Image (cartoon, rainbow, N blue to C red; front, side):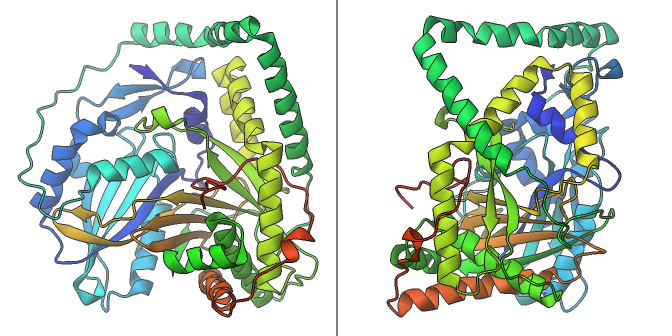
Length: 485
């Protein structure tokens, strides 16, 4: 038995009939597709490296403690590795429709919370893997580590052999109640962690001041905003689309126009939302789209741990600016301000403080927060860097990989960004009923990158970043090293 963390459990608590909380991706490979036996044997040979994939969630009676991870003694890999096909002609439209349907379906909580769908019938002899993993198991950074485990660097890695495994029997009610009692003592554990602070009071005061500063700047971004077609109620069905760009082009724009890779990506997304809103006949002058940006706070030594270590910051995407260079300068100023104010610290400390709350209250409070309109946030953009060399699955080369991100609260559109082998891939998830035009957003993102690259190649450099002052909060977005990128 292993007790789930507070943050991981929150992703279970926010789930409801219209809000499945799984993340995933769409990986396209050079064909031919593997046989079902090849597919299953490849996964069976890797599962011992990710034991969580053979575990299921055990909830405690009346939510008196945090949920537990326990072995599934009846684990059957054939339930999790599935096969399907798209209709002819097997183009992007057919694949995206399939992804939307697969991502609309909840994972079975009675089993380990993951599925893999092998998709045949794609054009040019390609095939795909559509993956679903519940957010309580992994965050963006740890799921990248997981991909490096499941995929190979070598197109011919050699024979695979499954490691024998036998699940432990499910814990008895007595064991579960005993673990529940341990969970109830979590405030004692929190107090125990305060001992080092008492030994170094100067450092403790410094961290407290930083926390207050960060929380104050974050609070300013939580003020309710005017209503938007980007937020509101949504249904149980999803649409999914994608966009892509060359990482070399993004780096060229960054080197010539200033900022970071993530600044350029956010500027392109700003252009996409501008096109989306204009297409909806919405006035954009003087307007911004507020995005929540998840930030990994995982220490370097924590990589390989399959749980969530994330915080969040907020950025205002200046869709009211027509000039793409001005949009980049605005975002660059915000991100620099976010770094200075250490806004990611606020989210991380709030998560830590949540350890004092009984899990039953956390469950109720998280569900309540998810059911209330989030009037201060319009969208979510999460950026995760991936490997910059080719990967293979069962000897087939991975050509591209775009993420899927769940919707939550009242956010109707969410964007995931993943870089791999010289490409930057955007996965856009939208509500089926209110997001029929999300292809416009994807096309706008690609146009936004193209505009910045064209300007960079013309030799024009923006000096407007020094004249735009935008208050911001938080720390740099995930996958961004501001001094290096």
